[in-house]
Amino acid sequence: MQRTAEQRAQHVAWMRQVADGDPDVFELLYDEFVDLTFSIALGMLRDRQRAEDATQDVWIKVWNAASTYDADKASVATWITTLAHRHMIDMIRRANARPGDRPGLEAGDEVAARLSNSDDVAEDATNRAYAADVREAMSELTGDQRTAIELAYFDGLTQSEIAERLQKPLGTIKTYMFQGMRRLRETLGVETDMTTGSQGEPRA
Picture 1 (cartoon, rainbow, N blue to C red):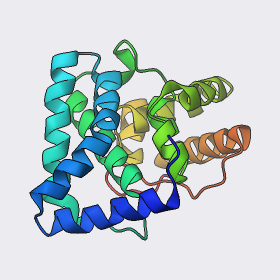
Picture 2: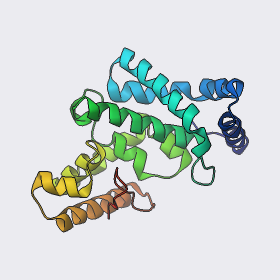
Picture 3: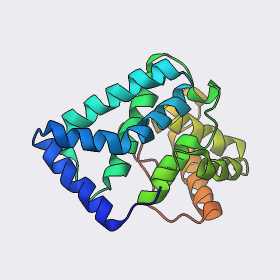
Picture 4: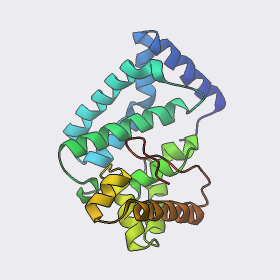
């Protein structure tokens, strides 16, 4: 959903008040974005009860981490979306299950969320329209490129961990990641900087 500049400015003001500990404004923020966080949770976990519990966990994180929000780096919607995605991935990893094996989460969903730094596209990546384009684009990658990207974004592995799992040199994995992400961006017409790994390790 596209939001106006005025709405985004209001969200930033709310975040500042939440960071100061205002529970009433937190309720406003919750009402504004709870459907977004729940849709992410349900889409990734495919279980309503788990999604409801996970959504509440996300909002506890929002309350506790509000002071870390930086309006110069992301919109409030993008910040909350990223927080929710990371929490769901952490839940899936703790359950020792590969997200790509769960019904409803397909190759491209998480990659779509990270491919763009545009506010609206980052939000819209939570539905399957943009992710469908990414899935189609990923089908055009080489098998090695696709595998490396899926291990990075689905299993949350660093490049070193991917190299160990695939028993390939680290430099080779970096090449797969760089070439694969570049090809995805070219196919999708997205021009952004290369992202980093789950532990801060450069992906390219």
